[in-house]
Length: 212
Image (cartoon, rainbow, N blue to C red):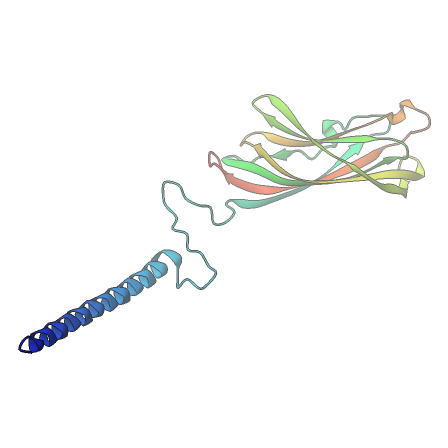
């Protein structure tokens, strides 16, 4: 019976130690929460809401957060002279890359019409270091339409369209050349006449040497 007070005292001391430990733990949790909120503001631009992810961008291997460069769009029309199967350079609006820039071509679309019964191949030629690299565009037949032409009056023309996402590069001082070729031309009496094809080239201009 004389030892009971000692046991009660030890129990009270253990409870007091446990309460102090829990108090320190709660304080640490509060400080950790405050530190996480500060990190979110500094590196994430604000508090992180549910469903969002904060990405810390490093200098050595940055994560792209938006498209870089200046938007670029160009429209050009290529003509088939009467009696010719190829589109000569004099009928082409060549795209010249500005000095100090690099063109990244991300999308190309085209629409062309030629006399009924003919077929056509469309090419986007990137000139670089004396080489011509041709990117073929798959054309899709859309139907036959009446045209009032300056070479034969009213004519039935077969029309084709193309649209394709690309990843083509053209360096400063070089050019991009829309081009096309058709069958027959005036070689066949059944398919005389001219024709045309229009190109729209879209992408971004980056500083020369910058990696996309």
